[in-house]
Image (tube, rainbow, N blue to C red; front, top):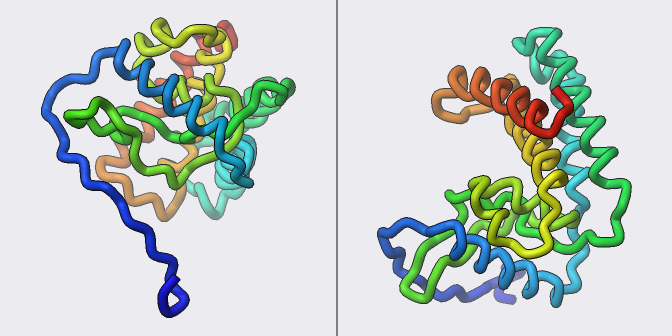
Length: 193
């Protein structure tokens, strides 16, 4: 601590330009999840993030351009899947929160997760749902049906953010349409479409 600022030192890992294969992605997940189980951190539950997205969807002032049928789709998906996924909290643990490929750095030491700003608690399948689908095949003990439901939930949250009045994601119009299409496809894959 210096002058009321917290200081932390980080190690720089030079990125390597090569593809991270699904087995290596799953391996870094296994090691990451094992390390997170050793940390006692008061982190929000993933349902808290879902609740924020749901408020955005329900607030017409925050999402004025969201068409009513799509608003209903997102509302039903966010509330229904959040409730269904969070019923059994016994297996919940600290998670990365958004371990998509953009938050995975390939280094000479192997892949490393970065950007831990969205840490939360929940089932490991919530994290696995952010990764390419092939990764889960290499993660022992993962519940594939739960991963599909979490993937639909993640796409619904992503879509909710794109419809916020003040969202500034590049190519937002494309991602609004694509996000809703991905929600529908993910719901179909888990038999909820």
